[in-house]
Structures are given as C-alpha cells and as structure tokens.
Length: 349
Image (tube, rainbow, N blue to C red; front, side, top):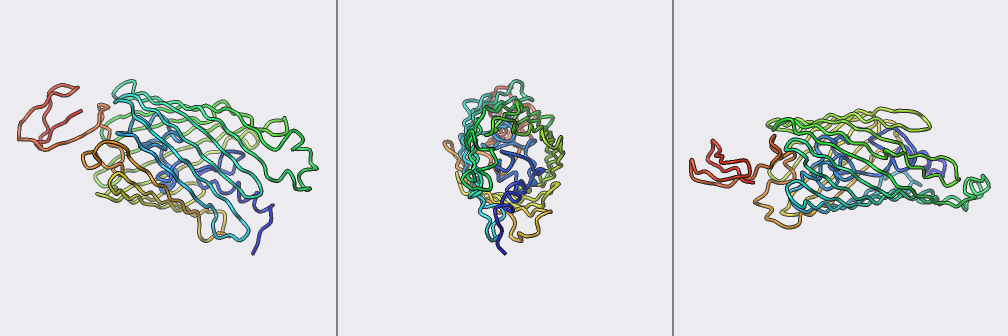
C-alpha cells in the first residue's frame, strides 16, 4: 500500500520513538546507545553523544571520541522516505574539563529537512558533581512550499525556512560507586522557528534520570517532560538495561511509545552500536526503526583503558578506576594520597 504526503506528515511526527508526538526538532536521534535502552541515557551519558542528551556527561570521556550514525525510521512502509543521523566529537582536555561538538539531521523527503549544530562543555566542579552546557543553532526548511495545496495557504509568504539559537544545561551527580543521577534541560529558551512570522516554538524538554550498577547489569530509569506550547506538558517514562560483557554489551528498553533492543561491539578503538525500536501505535511498519552508529576512540591504548562498553566507570570520589598489576602491598602516590587495593592492584590517576 502506498501512502501520500498526508500520511508522510503523520509519520514524520510519529517517528519520535522515545517521546510524545511533537513539533519541530523532536524527531532527531540523540544516541544509538540510548535508543537501545528505551531512550534512557541522562543518568549514564558516558560517550560523545552526551552532548545531545546531558552535556555534563562529557567529563566521563577518557579520551577523544567521534561517533557517526545514520538511520531510516519506519523503513519498509511503501511511499515513506525518512532519514536521520548525527555526528559527534568529544574531547576531554583534562580530568575535569571536556568539550563536545556535533550535528544532527532529520529529513522527510518532499516535506521537511531539519538540522542542528551544537557545541558544549562540561566541568567537574567537585569530585562528585559535574555541570555542562550547550549552545545550538536549529534550522529547518520545508520542501512542500511549491505544492499548490500548501503554497496558497499563506504560510510560506515569508519564505520556506527559518532558524534560531537554542540553549541547554546538564548536571551529573555521582552518589556512590554504583549509583549516579543526571538532569538535563534542552531548548530552555524555547526557540521560535516559525517560517510565517508567527510562533512555532520548539518544545522545552526537562529530563531526570538515574543509573544503578549491579554486578551484572547497568539499570536506568528516566522521566522526561516535554512542554509543547500547543498541546501542553507531556510526560514520558523510560526504562533501560545494559549487560556489559568483555567485548559486547547487550541492551533492552521500554518507554511510553516503544519497545527497544540493541547491542554494542568493541573492536579495539572502534565501537559499533545497533538499536531497534518498535512503535506501539504504528502497526503499518512491521520492520520497526533500525539504526547503526560507529564510534572511534582517538589516542591512548585501548587495551589499557576500560572499554567504553563497561558503562559508568567513574568512582564515587569523582576519579576513574585504572588498574595495573603490582606486587602485593606495593604503594603508589596518587592525587588522593597513598592507596593500595586489597587485590594487589594499584589505584592510579
């Protein structure tokens, strides 16, 4: 069965697998790792895509990392051609300060194209608390202005594209070795991206999440409130779990609108992340949304560092655990004083 532009517009809105149907700039992917865990990531935020989800998490990076993703939402529905993607770069400058840069895109062929360019920074203000902030430029262009059904409506009299600045903040708190929390706010200034000269404000989004690390899995819970200025506040709950293995991480999640699954594979400095989600309210697509991201860690020795698949490597005192073999009882001077581990390995920073 083939669908016309009316369905495309509905599909464009419904493609937001991890949040309520909303207006502009709500359908872009933020992290494939998160997508595999029901969209929950604010409390983990441990790779370069933290820029988009919770910029405070950029301090979790152990070395520079770049990541790229491309996906085809609702693939398999005849007549629907959607695509999205992102590219990120995270650069830790020292133990406390990190920078992030990235871009996202969403395209509904023949309807609209959306782009977001972002820059952010994170600072570990205490051993247990990190703060982050982002500045983004949002731009979209409608491709239906030449269609008589739309061009005569007057909406596009002032042009078919518009852009605006957007600002966000994030916080991470490391309560203990096993428990950490995250808070983030996106589009806090409610940027107006109207092409008609009226109001088309991007929804302000506030997310609160936590991650608890057990012996076998990392468990996440998150609540997101999206203040859509036309339909009011809408809440979305998200649950996710990750089972980190030696070179593989298995993921699954659930949220208000979808059931998700995914995995990550580490191959030296290279990491592949895959995510699949099935929307609850769109039975026309039996193939779901499938996305793949490729990440590359730059510099350092990948074997000497903990794999990025072993999420949440930060210690409760704000420093990272890095271990090397040593003689029993040998001491080493660290930034926190002289320490030895019970198992004979050294804590070093």
